[in-house]
Image 1 (cartoon, rainbow, N blue to C red):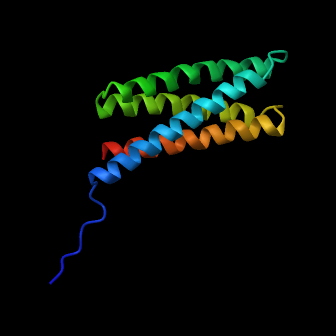
Image 2: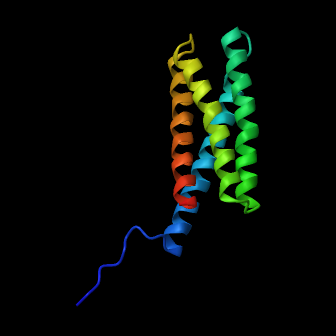
Length: 127
């Protein structure tokens, strides 16, 4: 009789794949934030406010990356991911309700969705 392997139990291969997915998502988020910081001028009040969110997010992504590289506890990694996600949520809400052009709205929305993915991946690695 064959026993079915528990497909939900994390194996080293799955953990490595999730870790790779997490690293890629963080790098993608970092690239989007850098591109937005370069592309968004500071001439209008909404642009200055968005840049404030993006600068904060840039710092939080760096903290998240460092907590992962330093192999900090799952709680610290989750806290860093939650902080970045909080800033992403604020930026997305601000831009969605504001006067930003469609390209900026789409880029911020993509960053927000990457933040959600990072949050899920961090949860999967911890769990």
